[in-house]
View 1 (tube, rainbow, N blue to C red):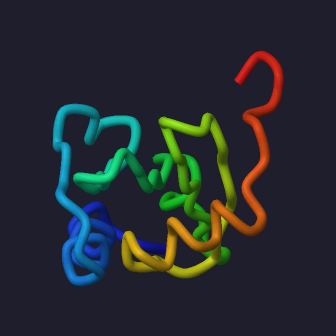
View 2: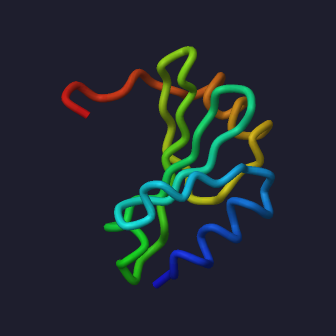
Length: 89
């Protein structure tokens, strides 16, 4: 199980800026290049592996990752394997 502070530290260490406006529901990291990384509260409250959602807002792509990438690594992951968000998401 991960704490909010641990996730925020992982995001910051990887080079993401933090948006603390939604910390009751999710942790958001963002880059100056229009990318975001999310960790939802449901994910960090479980004992299993933590799944992160990467988002490219300009291209409207998402990708799920098991590790916290740097913004540059996230851009490459999204470019290679990103998919449009699921309907109703």
